[in-house]
Length: 638
Image (tube, rainbow, N blue to C red; front, side, top):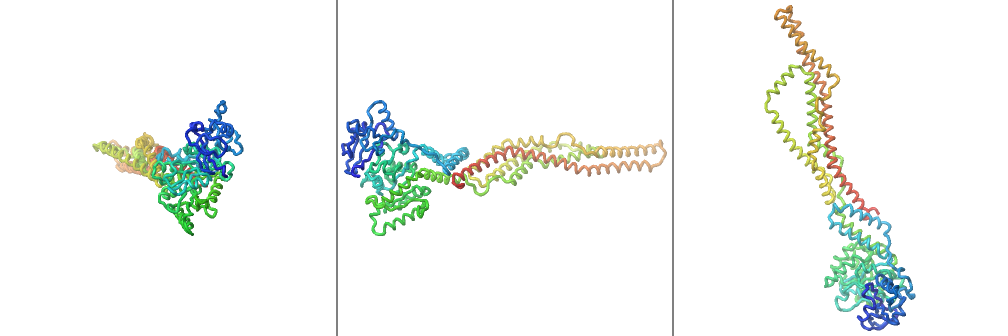
């Protein structure tokens, strides 16, 4: 491996080809016979070369067919070749390991569609956000929107690559481990802090340009180890990122760590015996990312500094801290974080870590696992706005009570009673004695000011009815919103308030249109006979009186008993007929009043249902829909 430890810079920026940087670097040793037009760092067997690709004799002749066909620089080079210009070449070993004559299109990033439960959860999350935009504040949906955006972006990029970031605190040995995994010195190490100021990428195979563009890693910081190269099947498809210190004194470094950690497929956390229990690491990263345990590696570095059994003790304590953070540990075949002790400096445990990473990469499931964990985290944040306390909905009892309150507000009972009294009054007018009707008319004419008091009562009733309607709407809205999450309870109340606008006026119209019909109510079949009998009783009274008067004035023969009996029969029979008609009219009058009350109740209930209950039901239906979608998102249906 003496001559196979070169590192190639994967440049995707048009201005950073070898020709553009020919005079920018220092002359260094060439690890092979190809011409180097950039900078070479002399490191003996581990020398790193920057891809320059000058048009020199060696570089142009030996590297003409060995192009890095990954992204913009490859297309730029292909365009120059097709135009008859000077070919942009690389003075290193071919990317494909066999001379590099493959077509440029052969290794373009190809994304894959999400399948199975993850696809269903993403579809449900998208539907959930769409249904909730007008009900929930945008800040609450921001994380869900970010997850959907990242899912869409990651799907368009290579599914054959796994992006793993190496993160850790100052002096934990991240860069040393990065170089140990790459088996070449790529990332700078040393006592100066911070050593790593920007993310550095090492790629084991082509097609990762889009992923690196997404991480905003410039071409000058993209490397490819030739030690394993494409022939290193164990790590084929790996994109390894060395991050700055997460506890760096430079704010820009910490911001870069946070930005990249949100985009990578997996993370290797490097801790050392001194800082493995650092609160900044656990509270800011490990605890919030506990749900991402399946894509997390935690390595205890620098175990060569621990004497005897101290390494095992520190490792056990690290596992205890991770368990307290809520991070599942991948032990005994269970899914979870991988925890390993290593020494990146001496190489102890690095091989085991390399094997674990290799198996992880070859599964090609890291991106889906990361996205699934992000969906879990988004669902956990949204739980308070989607999960209700207990049963929700509007019960039949609440509906009936609302209809009863509206019936009371519109005066359904009073209307029925008035209709019953009106029916009885009509019966009394038809079947009552004429003398009694005359007396009642006389009493009405002697009562002054009755109309004014009636008008005042009507005004008071209208004010009371409006208040009853408002109270009924508030009560049914509170019943419907009971137990709902705050945004949905508010939406239900707002729907009820909007529907209540104009409800009192609509009920007033119903009181007129749906009340008792104008004119005289219908009469039973026996009514004409009763009227004839009452008329006969009146005629008997008149006949008896005339008969008696005739005897008094001497026109008729004297005989007081017969005319008195006739007159008494009419006088007694008239009230008896009236009483009998009144008793017989109570049943029909009651039914007539009940029909009037029922019609007004039904009309008021229908108006309240259309204006208030239906909008509330629509909001509750929408909530049930989003609740079902949330169940899918949170994995409850899995």
